[in-house]
Image (cartoon, rainbow, N blue to C red):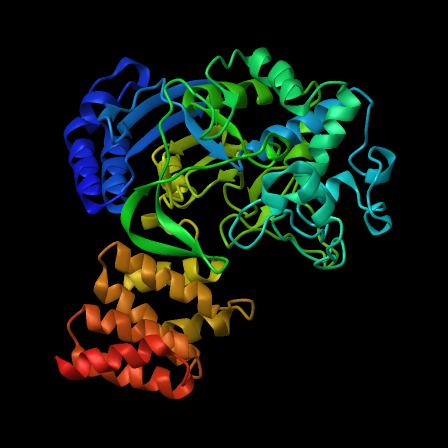
Length: 497
């Protein structure tokens, strides 16, 4: 997909955003969330997005924005159906807990009680370890995200059983699809029906999710929003590309516990309401178990990143002191965050691989809970938040002196390098260059041997037009780490200007 389509889709988003967008509580006028999403869609090149917000058991905002199908100029509506990719695992977690409530399994049991023909070394693994991606099993997909054995179940299953463990069970979190293939086999065996049918009958039909179904690009899915991407897998790493392109996805039926559900924001929201309202799981303790992140052998939780830092039973978690959340993420394109202590949930579905909406879900929540806005310091570590509060008083002057004063008053006050670096880039994103420079400079003073700290400071200086200081700091970064190719490249660029 070339730039022509990218430019067209962004134009279509801009023209149609308000017209198709706001249906919140019958209102037709754009509100601040619509404007926020308009900016995000243009910045991230998102063709289409659906949003649903739940408060106190009710959908209080339901919106559709942009273009569901670029090739045929089809606008997104509330009926547009999006792939939710790995968010499917959240439904698998519910299915397993339904079977536990029926007395057919216990998540703490070894899988050998429920499945035959597995290697001896796998037999002591528990269902919980599979659900929480802490099993250490070899992965049934390769580095390019393709299922082993050419996608053929027997071949994939035979191949993965010959591979060694990646680590000792419970030692760490490592995203793994093999565990979910096994869980599909267990659901099928214990329920007496294929796992897709069990989930359809016990979740989709119970909630009334008429548009929701399993499927991939081979299946005819009415009102499909399609699939586009700005990233591609290169040698096992996701690399940002320049052009928007259409993508084709294949999810073999046996693999659809890992990924495979397609739905709408409205129906996901209704499913969340049913889950919290006791229609899918009878006991509140079952929901608590479903949403409790695994504790690893070292006593810590493990997850994808600093935001989604834990993993429960098919549900990634944002384990934090303020406004904790459970937040399934799928295909770098869809997410739904539930904030149990705030009686709030946000559903965001897009048709762009690379949109990563989990990174702006908290900001949308901030329109309902103001202290969750980034501008108010939400998401910062406790120490960085304290520093921010004091720096605002001095207009970000004397940062080092203030940091030392805070440290003297409280020995537990620690400014981690990565936290500071992230805060600096957040300020740059908010176009607060002076404040960002203050933070980046402080980070170099706190971590004088960090090549990355000087690299980030140099980048901010270059962005502010201070070529001389930028060059000096890039040179310092390269001195600390001669392998820093970015610093070397930037030095060449600055010297030729």
